[in-house]
Image (cartoon, rainbow, N blue to C red; front, side, top):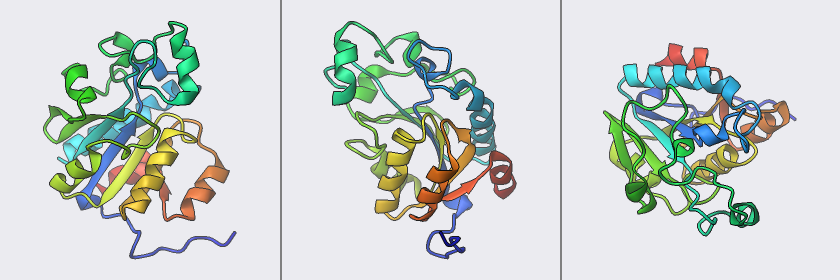
Length: 213
């Protein structure tokens, strides 16, 4: 595969960027019963990126899952498990909260989030509930980004093959400039990075990001 050369149409604009965290919740950490391997391990890098964005007074948006008890609002592939009585990121439970070190203070408000509205957690910091893999599908994310005048999205979080990947494809479809923090996402692989580069995603490290901010 030929290397992707710098392109003015996809190059990040960090002055008009937002940091996106995907599914970085307690129930998805590595040591949780239904957690994702490697997620606890990348938590320090995500915390560093969140701190850098707060200090730069740029938006931080935490995209989260809330599975109703019994799984009625879950992806089809997860409903059988949830119907057995297993609770994962159930509204109002400790496991649904953001991972340690990420929240600026307030607990998540399930009523607000499940209604489709963003929850403001701090200055330029929000939580948004997504009902499926992608962060844009049936969510308020695009309207929020428009209000914040964002054209570049910097992604971090849980489980690259699923929700981060789907969200970056949706972002590309909406003409956002897209960055992936390769050391702040779980289950990253070189083959996935090569494939994402083909749709204009720019991989970088958290250290490289902080220098840009």
